[in-house]
Length: 399
Image (cartoon, rainbow, N blue to C red):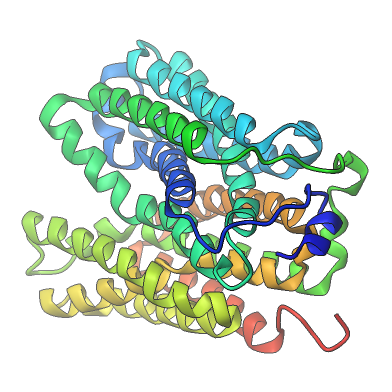
């Protein structure tokens, strides 16, 4: 981002180094920490429910609590934090994330656990909202794509690998140990941000009345619609991947674990492979990503008839979904770089809201039909996002 663009965005003028690994990796660790904390209950619902004396469905609402809180907070973050140094804000809310994880770890009732999840949601909304605006301030224009890919690799890796790692830790030491570990990781991320990031001041305060201004830009509005459709579709389907896999005659418990591991590993690869394309052409990257997700979701109910086919389909799904965060964020950045912090806040809100809506939608359909129907409906939602992507571009000749 040039100095002129920075001033239009309300940021203090700066001359970032071409690319510095340490601060970019510190922000990536921050995004990994918040998203892993958000998603952790997915793999631990049964032991959490048993320990807190509630039904698994009730324990599952902890994910919705975090997603809704994060969605609301993210959209209001730029005006609420005003001109505060972004490095200081990141450190403070990573510390709050640590507190939320620690409170979750020691909870003896669902009310206390839910309070911890509220704190996690607040921290996530702020950290994720600000992450999108740090890349252009930590690298020059030629390297900003690489910076954004690395920063949002934290989100992608957390979504596809963070939960399995936490579940593994919980199997060894208990679910409370997993949350204690996340609290420690959050403090490490806070320390890394404090040590490696330069001070990130802003020149002008964002006002509440201007928080929706980015929506006036057709490219930003379109990017948010695409984000909502792909996230809702993915989480409506992915939440019920395991029940669908269990219908396969050859899918043993060990094979299901292996299949989810394949999904995670492919997602990490996809983040960097398709993410590199997203830095140059976010529309092309999204066409690949949404097409792959839709195909995989539609094919999986049939592919489970053979274990090898199911693994191939999950690898495709993971590889293409792994790039969604960086691709949608790149679309937003390319559409209107002058309002990146505000538009990133809206994007984060839409993304987290999409997680909550997708999980609720998938559950409602699953309770009335079956996992296969959920996946086919989800594939249709993602295809709607693909159609929007085909019809529009992040920028036009009039921009």
